[in-house]
Length: 157
Image (cartoon, rainbow, N blue to C red; front, side, top):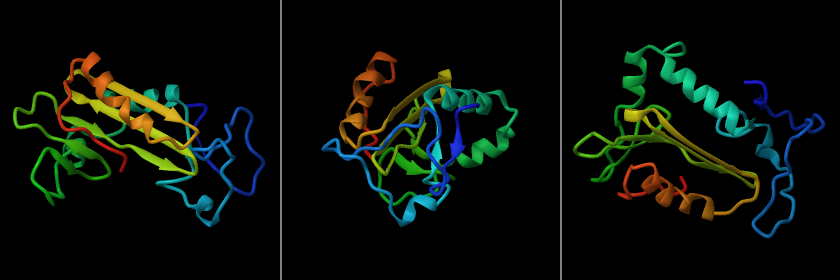
C-alpha cells in the first residue's frame, strides 16, 4: 500500500492528494476535527484499499477466528438484516449465502463505499472527493450486476 497515509493537517498536501469539495463544488475548509485519526484522516486509493482487502482474505493479517468475531452481529437494535460487528457494518440475510460486510463513510467532502461480498471474495470500492449522497445510490445497480441482488440497502452511515 504505497498511496495510503495518515493526514497531517499541519503539513503541505502530498503529491497527487485531492482537494475535498462540498456538494456545491467549493473546496471544503479545514476544521478542528481534521487532526483526528481513525474514522477520519486516513487517505487511500482504490488500488490500495483493494490490496488491504485481499490481505484480509489471505489470512496474513487476521486469524479466521478474529474475523469471525469481527463479522458477528452485536448491535441487534432493530429487526432486519442490518447489524454492526466489531468495526464493520453487516447485512446478514436469513439464508446466509449472500452476507455483506461493509462500511460507508464521509468526512470533509470525501465519500467512501467499501463492500465485501465475503462468500465469493468480491469487493466493491468507490471513492469520491465531492460530498454527494448519490455515491451510495450506485451500490444497488452494482450489486445487481455482481449477482448480489437488491435486498435491503446500506445507506450512508
